[in-house]
Image (tube, rainbow, N blue to C red):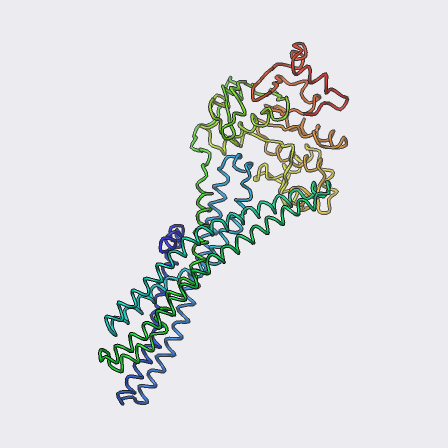
Length: 578
């Protein structure tokens, strides 16, 4: 149990002194909680001895009131220190987690871990800062108080002291069993919360498809099952916890009765005078209350331990190495070069010995069947993942030796699936270069052919758009993302064919915007339509993770291979789709 408390102290950082301060005030409060017993014992003793007076009674009353006021003050200070520290600690931890997530490979986010991240942020961290941090000092106070009560028993009689240690030991042994049981169920409890979070995310993100295919009943059933599973796991936790809790309460009752019987025996046998017997009676029913109260809060600490495990597991995910210090230089060398690149998701190779180069200002197109590895080739250039073997060079330098910030300054990506933030149109464009002037932002919007529709919005550039660009059409959102890339003005552009899934009216605008974006740039294009790549300097057919053919459109058509077959089968007036 103490180990769990140490785990919290281990992450408290610069706020550790506040928690120690809370422990100190809780200790003082624990001492003062015994003052009424001591005062009562003193007054009763003077009454038995016949030496009580009004002055003694008055002083006792003043001391009693003072102790109550100080208890309240120390409790307030302890709560103020520990609760504020909890929010501060986890505010910092969330910022650290954000920095950590920023450095993780993109593969982590595409392997079903979004629910885990959401659960850690919205459940695990919240539970600790709102529950455990509020009771941490109280639990330490209970331990201090129990020690004081046992010390009192030794003062009364050494046999009472030994008996109180034995009874407390029985409660601790049962409490350890309760802790081990709760730890197992706490892990299941938090895992069920993660599954439920993922189910909610899946349902809300896919609600459009679910409604379109009339799957509300089926998908709602899956969501309901996740809620039912979560409820069952929580109930199982309570059912497994309460037998131990009742056992602790039973030992508390039997232990108190045993101490009462032993005290009466010692008094009757003449080992204890009347004053001490009365004092003992005053302490007796408070004797094991601290340790009982401690185990009342034990379930929170075990859940906290499971939460800490999940938080630490997330922080333990390996980051992309960002120790590179080399700077990019101009030279008469390929702008981009892949040398014998092999890459695997888990143990399955997705790319196998891929090699090619692209000179500055040229266009390289990637075509081929879905799942062949086209997107993976482009993603490796941005270090969304790192290669398993081989090298990717940018102007002759391995991209792993270039600082990530410098690498990304030199690359812009236009995704087929656009994401815009719930913010103003202006800020969404300015994301490409936050230090850009307003004139530069407006000019980028004009080049991306989105200035006109922006000015038709209710507040123009100050219009707040929905999360993900939900309040705009797909073509409008795509043009805003292109404006963002134009403003960034990176020398390398990765283009996941932006016109593949937009209507004909928007396609011409997007083609014009892309033409503005690509002027003088080195292009790596994931091709979906024939008319966008016929003029490419190099077309590579990616099949089963390898380059099966490469060359210009004319060369590949003359070879009569897979590319020519694709063109002949899929060429239509509107192009061909992957």
